[in-house]
Length: 558
Image 1 (cartoon, rainbow, N blue to C red):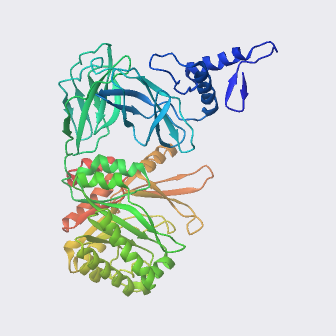
Image 2 (image 1 turned 60 degrees about the vertical axis):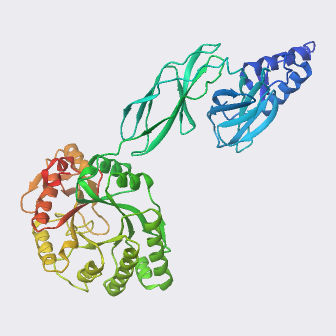
């Protein structure tokens, strides 16, 4: 086969005596076999002009290109008096579909964007209707073709449409067989809210991936072996079930950037009362807000009555200083945070500003005060994340930014990040040593507005190489990675009953000794017992691949 003008191949013509008629016949044969012929211009009796057919075939050859959209599927017709309603479903496409063209006897009638068109027909006269898809590059698909039939020839609408099973995210439909017209019924087309879902040969169909607690309207039409479609069945409206609501109180961070975190949230949402979603952050170069809502997370939580706090995060000291002290930038942050809370109907905002200079303490308190006032004016809450401290030192390079009493006076939640006594560039050691945690709790116990504090625990681990400092920082590991590492290097993990944390050591392939400390379920639950015994709500950083056995403890019963 060889290509002509880059569009379509013809059989190799080697003899000068090969007639043009033979070559044309080959073209017409391929076009008829599915190469994308335009509808032939025929008379009502079917006696079309040979010249018209030849010209139509030539046009089809010129218009078909590699990568053109696929032929529309499930083309059906329903006729009432002088009007025919055509319905179809999109075929495969390599580029976005811009719309569809509808033809009658080879002449263009309409251009539409959707998968439904109403056209005029002549009663009693056989007519050929066809539909082509057109993509954004102007490429046309092969035609889906159907002929008209009188209403007496079409099947009768199916009866007995009902829902035999309904869940929070799916519906199973069933119906009775339709009475045939003059042709055999070969299938049933299912419509949801007027749009084609698909076609089945039996009288039952499962409809998955529905939104929870949502109403949908279904109809069914019978289809015969000529593509004639019956009038629709009587409509059935079904509402999916509302999922069981959360009964928990845990505050949990979910990472918008990883599917594992969301999956973990979905698995344990009934034990979670508030989810802090990591949607927004600062651009370190410009200090502007970047990020976006993740509708799947937000809607999943709301339907299940889990409060949604969108986190606004900045952990770059220069950028944070600009946000707090540059009047225009500060105003833009405040306005954007409030706008996002309104647009996405968040229950609240989580403000996570870290690594700020102690000298910005007053500016930060002022920012929190103004943001809280604006959010409260629109009925929203504010949670502020603060580094843990055992006493207030306004000059401390890590926790000096946070004036606990002043923040608690304005915010609805003060989330204490009760971890980090050892960190990536420190010497190895417990991440949330129990003895240190007890002093943190003791300090918070002395403060006003204690009911606003949530004590947070880490769910992760750290792997320190022997050398420490900025040149050899520890690697943060989720619990699943810690357990896998322990098994791989043959170093059983031990539980330190004083620090209440799991640890082990090993030597890597280069002979470098590593020390690992991590939050097993036992460690996490022990911290939570400390917090709960002091009448604090508890939170976790962050959902993902933590020690799953923690969720079966009565302390986290939902």
